Image (cartoon, rainbow, N blue to C red):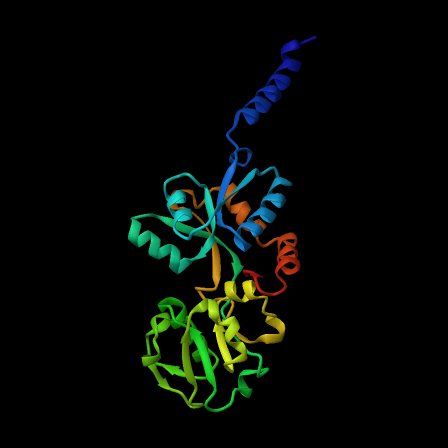
Length: 267
């Protein structure tokens, strides 16, 4: 018998198995994902459970502020983070000489117009009192939302930096009242409409279906949360797989069951 003839394929097979076993599979190492405590961390926990089914080991690292997760990612203490929108990330990059990038959309947290008095934008009466947040970012966002709803017109180009002074047309003579964002849910019995960020909608237990009359579009940059990575890791196949899991049927169902329409899957 020609042993060389029979042994050669076997040795090749053993060698192939050995090479595969010694390869560096990034899915086998722990992937640390930073998220702020609350909804963001809860969604990442759900993603981690789905990732485990595909052999990806995800550890959720919770934070209580909005700056540290980006610093930790930029410095290499995290592999990914999930808690912010692109404008926030880009501002961090600019101020910290960092190179964080989005590798996928995660969830939507849309600002909306809410009311206990009317059921639609068309029902808002002349002279109605409309409350918006009094901080610069959310205040401008609230005014932009009123403009998108067709209630006011803003000076061209002001975008989310708008202030009440930038209102150039107000056909219903709305009385725009600026309030602390946390007070907006409690103001619904005193004002006709309030523009409320989604985190305060959730904490106040506002029913989006019953009290919401107009929401930001689903492609609004400030409403779309993203999965962030360092620029050099943007093509990492394991990280890309995690980004895909956010759009899986299991995660969509988890979000629907858990958040009842307040938070939505990003498209």
